[in-house]
Length: 389
Ligand SMILES: *Cc1c(COP(=O)(O)O)cnc(C)c1O
Image 1 (cartoon, rainbow, N blue to C red):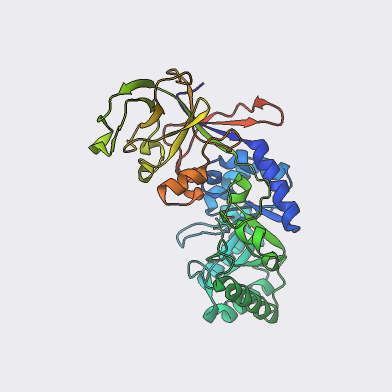
Image 2 (cartoon, helix red, strand yellow):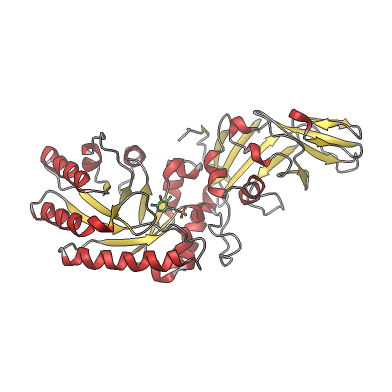
C-alpha cells in the first residue's frame, strides 16, 4: 500500500460508458482530455473503447497524437489548435482537427499539399458560449470557404459542432437559444454544400438531460468518470465514480479542549479529542478552500477536516478516544465511489465551492496513480506517476 495514491477502476469507466450510450441512444464520444480528467489518458481511452465509445475527444493535438502512438486507430477529434502549431503530424495520424476560422482552414489545407492526404476537419460554430468557434456573423463565409477547399480536394469537412454554456442548468433559456442557433448554422452549412458525417452539440449534462440536443453524437466527459454533471438535477443513472484517493494515516494524537489546529489556528477543540494526520495537501491538488469543511473516511466513519489544508497534509478529527479509534497506518479515503459511505469528489467540490471536474483533474502532485479492474479483481499493473496536464 502506498503512502498516498489515486486508484482508478477501469471497470467503472466501462460501466459508465455503457450506461451513457444506452441512455442517449446515439453514438458517443468519450472525452479524455486533461489526462482523462486526471484518470489517465491511455487507460481511460482503452476502457472507453472497450465499452463501445465510437469516438475519442481531446483538446490538444499532443493528446491526440499520444493516443495514436499508443495504438488507438478509431475516430478521434482534437479541438484546440494554436496558430503556430504544425498540423501535419495530426493529418498523417488521421486525427479530425477542429477549425475555428478561415486562417485555420487554410493552414489545414496547406498540410494537404505537404502530406498528399486529405485532412479531416470539423468546424466549430459559436452558438453563444463565446469561447472558441466561428461566430455566426462569419459562419456563412467560413462554411463557403471550407466547401471551396473541399472541392479542391484539400480537406474534408467531417463534422460540425458547438458547445453549451449552461447545460447543467436545463431551464436556462440559453440552452434553447444555442440549440436554435446550431440548427440555423447546420442549415447554412448545408446551403454551402457541406455534408458532414457528424453533427454534435451535447456534453454530459445535455446528453443526459436534453434529448433534442443529441444529434449524431454526444460528447461525454465527466459522466463517463462517474460524476454527476448536474448535481441535484440529473436522474439517477447508476453511474459509478471511478477514482478513489487514499492515504495511510501518518499519526494520531490527542488534543485538549482549547487547543487549536493547523496554520493560523482556524479550528479550536471545544472538548478533548483525537486528531489524525493525513499525508496529502494542496501540493497534491487538494483544495485549500476545503479547510474546515471537507471530510475524510477513516475506519468506517467520515472524519471532519480540522483547520487549514496544508501543502503536504491535512488534520482530521477522529473523535473521543473509543473502540473505533483508528491506528496509525489506517486507510484514509479522501474521496471514492461513495459505496462505503465515504465522501465523493462531489462532496469535496461542495466543500471547496467548485465542481467535481476540478477536483479529479487537479489531484495528482506526488500521489501515485494505480489502475485496477474490479471486473477481474486484479491490478492491471500500470502504476504511474500522474502527469501534470
Ligand atoms: C470538456 C468538453 C466536453 C465534455 O464535457 P463534460 O461536461 O465533461 O461532459 C465536451 N465538449 C467539449 C468541447 C469540451 O471541451
